[in-house]
Length: 239
Picture 1: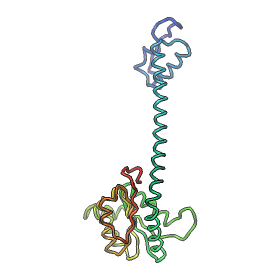
Picture 2: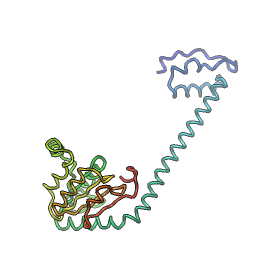
Picture 3: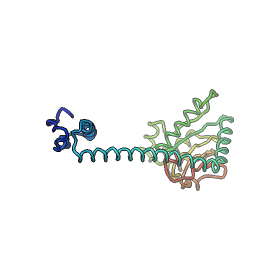
Picture 4: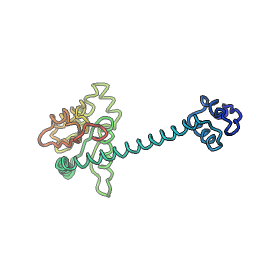
């Protein structure tokens, strides 16, 4: 707040006196301080100590900015490297997943999708694109995200427990020939694992999206299921 600062009179240029900024450094924010220092610099009313501080601040800010840019660039590089690696490893299971979805929808079936947190958002996004459209006009496709009905979720979680919020919906809505899209970064979420078991009871096909080796999900899947497992340990890269 500049109005709260009392600015003393400037010393004469090149007088050798301390820069007037020394008197108010503790009462101004960093940005105001830097701006005032720049003014002092051009008026030649700044002491040599403040000149050094100013140059240090400028150099430090430049280094931080450069390091941030390099870190951002490295994120793009790491992401591209993983995609290149995954393209070779995951092309087959992705093709198998497409075939499973195609067989489901062409026979009048539907897709049930579930996951927690960001995976729940992915499930909802998938269902939205199925029911609506993706990139081009086409007939609507049947898909339901099991994480959207707050009444069902809270009722089941309250009356039973959180581990069965998806499995009960699968048993209620799933029929033979349907597909369960089970999404989980680690593959160890208890409620998603319970949904997989329920889907098997309904003779459904599971398409599992995981990472980190697939966790318990990898062990729960059958040979007729599809497992798309991103070869990475970091959540940001998997999702």
